[in-house]
Amino acid sequence: MTQTLKLLSELIALPSVNPAFLPANDPHAGEQRVADCLAATAARAGLKVEFQKVLPGRSNLLVRLSPTGKVKQRILLSPHLDTVDAVSENQFSPRLKNGRLYGRGASDTKGSVAAMLTALCEIAKSKRRPAETEIVFAGLVDEENAQRGSFALVAGGFKADLAIVGEPTRLQVVTAHKGDVWLRLETRGKAAHGARPDLGRNAVLQMARIVGLLETTYAAQLRKRRHPLLGHPTISVGSIAGGTQPNIVPAQCVMSADRRTIPGETEATVRREVKTLLRRNKLSATMASVKHAACLPLETNPRLLLVRQFLRCAGQKKPAGVDFFCDASVLSHGGIPSVVFGPGDIAQAHTADEWISLPSLERGKDLIVRFLKSLP
Image 1 (tube, rainbow, N blue to C red):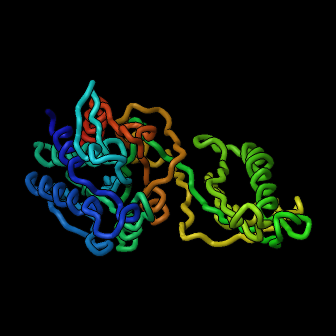
Image 2: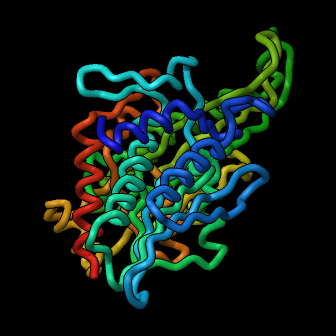
Image 3: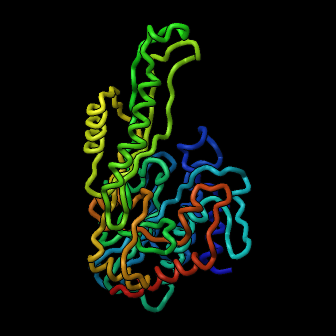
């Protein structure tokens, strides 16, 4: 068993479910067990370890490898430590089968955690370590909910010349990903007896027309916009609720939608164009705020020196783009040029039988080692 596989198996067996998805005091909640395991592994390799408190009982883990000389640049390896909840208790028991390791977080994103920290430990133990580059591994908390770990890292003044954010990208170097805006619309009608619907005004019917408009006319409008790596933005109506019982004309209806954005789009522009669309089609709805903060898209210049160097080490001629959102956006907008990279496939993330292929895991570690060894 390789060191990468051994570490990943240990991490899967340590539940680190984001507390946002669990009842209070659930034994599976929180990232601390994983952070402590990684800290012990790093300390055995002679690396400097520290914790950055983010929330009660939840801290970012920072592991540093100092260069042999003066620091002239810094590389950040930043996977997240939390996962979504498991479908069954079995997902916290790592299982090897047919060249795959199964378990919660295997792909999203404990595979990246294991590959990145193992790579850093390998560099630390090797005879040749960078002379001018400081390498920092940052295991971040709360990516699956509100990205408070990456926000805390940026707010604390952390700077780097390049961040490699660990996510399952099938070992593709990603320089762009979509952003996310949640919309909440509410329609108001007038209640009446179900026997006399003509005396009321049906809020659900109004909302149905809005849903149809968003999923057809608006979606077609979005398909006309193109980004070279990300394609077009999208809209998806995710929930709708209205009325109280069948024999009452509903006076209120609420709908929520997920709007994936491409670079150049903002929450303000999205809200403005939806309002304009409704007005032009003589439909009325109140647009309410939502707790979920808008997530900005990522677009990092692939011509940056360190990005080009990483692409070469990965054997990749052109960068890739992905639809999902991650900590790379937070770090990038906080002043740290960021790319996304890691073993595994996002198609396995959050699934009941999440897995990662062992060749992908080991190659991911090897590619990171290759890049780190190429640094001055």
